[in-house]
Image 1: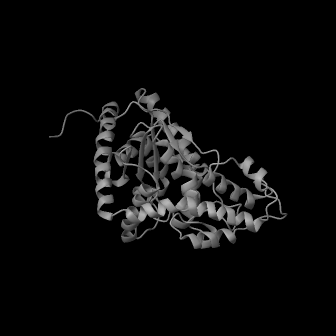
Image 2: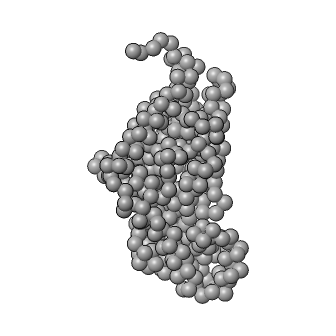
Image 3: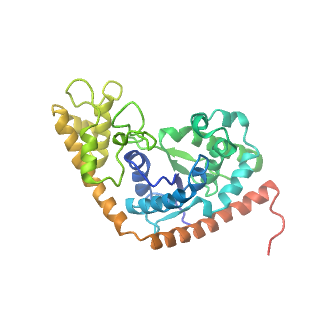
Length: 331
């Protein structure tokens, strides 16, 4: 374990990572490897809180792991593993959950939204406590999350403060890291709504592994706004503002610079400009993905899980002692 501060984040194993996932989170994961002791996992236990197909889950876990490696998560610099292979996550979730007020869980808006489709079940209800355990089991100092996960992180912070107050300073209270631009990428067909894999309109999102011609077609069909000015105004011009954020991240240029240069450009030409930047930016990722072999990825994830277990167990030994469950040893 290094002396650097620790950052933790997880991703659901959907297999189909879209531009919102990449720009809002995963692109930042790669950069954070240089600044923190980075710990990342595929949160497959969270994935089973809603209806799912077991065979599809197995495939999507692997596909998601491959995608993370292709994007630039480096196992030689980061800890990468499947959440379900580190049982300390679930153990700590129980220990934290026994003291988490129902009122705090009742306020979670994602439970209200997801339970309408998946039903009101314990796994979905307790999801935020498991998320807190994911973070705290590694004593993470920071968590990169999008705006939609801010409420869950606030609960994790409250849980850490409550545990520390009861048992002594044990967990760092994790800080939120949110990219200034790209934290909430919007739908290409409805720029007032977040880009989502659940949207029935496939043209509303760009998948990281879409072919170049597909990317161009989707961006050419992207909804824009009235008028003809390329300007950044998320309220009055959400379509163009969304495209400007995408272009900014793929060119590493500020939005102000892009607006100054392209202010008078026709929307059709501007969409092509954005498409060219996205295609170029994703080419390396698609190439990397195709070179990864399933067996090698499985080996890397197994090694990551073993390392994660050792690190998590160091923390859990102390937690068990504090809560009164640490007496004796098991041979």
